[in-house]
Length: 371
Image: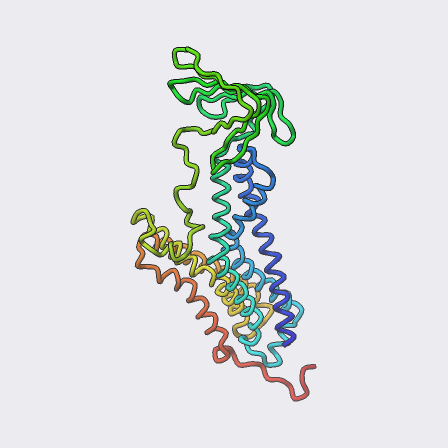
């Protein structure tokens, strides 16, 4: 029916716009933390953009259901003000028939959220955590200023005479006292930082390397064309992440006790696994709940304020129940059905409210149609 297609288009466009606004608001708050990391570590703009995009699937888990809920209220309020909804009910369309567009929207949102929860979120968040680890454990090259002695790591001081636009450094002096038994001094004409198997390394060109022991006695002197210096804060600095974040793990691993490091950690992972299964259905649940409250019974403009208030309270109640259920599952793994019921019950109740047998009797039509 053209009316349902028209309503679906309005709902879908409004949902996209609202999702963009909500994600933008969350992005502004999260950007401060990401920018602080990038500025302190001297990362490029591309790293900032990649981290921003890679963390978005986590925000979409809650932004999309709320956007769909607001879109249903927004669009139906507008078509009610234009009397389109009143006309459709007066010609005999049931609440279930009027709710076809919201149901279709809910199915689309839930389908995307399932894909996001199962594949997109763990994949993108893995990229985010890898880049975050790389930046946190890398060398802050932005701190290397011309003609200034900088302690890049503990017991290692560096001086550069000049720095090119492509981050190639000139006239380099390094004082390395990380090993207690000896002190190494290196001078070089040029050098550049590279990443070697997750470890920041300075590749020097045309220089001299000398070392002396703790008593100050000179040792070997080496002239080199090319020499590499590994930059680490400690001798046991990690080059790879030891653990996988909950958000980047698969649902199967989250629900498996064998993959957890401890019993308490398993409870958290188990709750996250069931949440990743149940949360996509919030997209359908909140949209259906909103449509059911709006379309149940006779539609009147003077009742809109009351129904809108009921809608908001119902949405907040459902979200609170999901949060509470997730907390209970975190403390007791056997309570996992509560998390799924907190999402499925609103869907079941909404379908029951929209059933034609539960609505008030439709107004009779005149013999000659509507004037």
